[in-house]
Image (tube, rainbow, N blue to C red):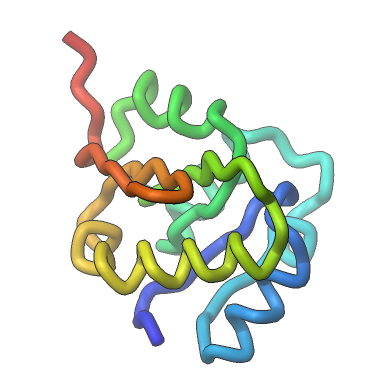
Length: 126
């Protein structure tokens, strides 16, 4: 069980969130803590202020982090072909177990079925 706290974007299934909770994870879905219509930047700022790792399937968050120069929050960006909640949950657990230290420090992790790549935050645009 990671000591990190997580915020799942609206495109992450409630089933995944519930499964992670059964593992003892501290995770909330955006709809539980914010208005469902919240803008991406507001979600990102909330995660930053609350020191939560944001889990999403929305590429816009990576762009916002790159352009803003923020060092936090860490972001797990899922790029999975098969979005079934059980498979998503398994990949999240696998990646967090390997990259917990990096996630504590501030990274963007891009996850697909077979790999996970990360970039340290803040992202330097050259």
